[in-house]
Length: 214
Ligand SMILES: Cc1cc2nc3c(=O)[nH]c(=O)nc-3n(C[C@H](O)[C@H](O)[C@H](O)COP(=O)(O)O)c2cc1C
Image 1 (cartoon, helix red, strand yellow):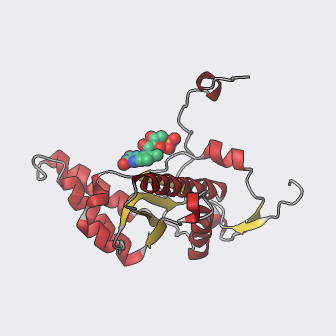
Image 2 (cartoon, rainbow, N blue to C red):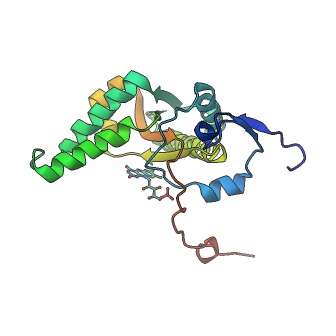
Image 3 (tube, rainbow, N blue to C red):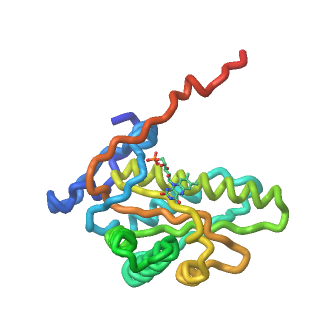
């Protein structure tokens, strides 16, 4: 373990199998970034509240011009998660010309099940400033906060999946997440222990995308 790095007690991925939480060395940041990939299927074991709190504490360390702290978070578990899954099901149904068609019913129920089987969702909100420059900077900072959360989760062996889209504008989602006046939802992050190891998706090498101007 690198000097100065302390072991942190986190529930490892297979804690349920082993029946115990183990002390894990902190994962190197580069490893966490390289290993992170969007996780769609989770184990049923819950993510303890202290662990989610720690991820949100990582989120709010994001760079933030003028320290506006534009972010707010709502964590959905239990009954609120059940309600969110129902809203997701209703939202998916709006995407089909005939939601009663057999294929549509299957797809809609799959969405519902996947959401019910996700241990937690973190709804991330951002202040909507009147000034367009501040608005953009606040949005950028909040997306960086989301990335902090996702990388910290990867370092803890947790999976995440950021979603945006029309669902964010739904009044029932806003009501569920208690979005304050003057804020909007910028993303909803699924969170849990990945059901399986997934290969991170391919990226073009950074070298191909970088110009060095000496
Ligand atoms: C700003 C943003 C919005 C996203 N919104 C969605 C979404 O609405 N639905 C979805 O399936 N994935 C969404 N994603 C996840 C991407 O699809 C995912 O990151 C991409 O497929 C690359 O896969 P990886 O995260 O495993 O590397 C979003 C990602 C970002 C950065």
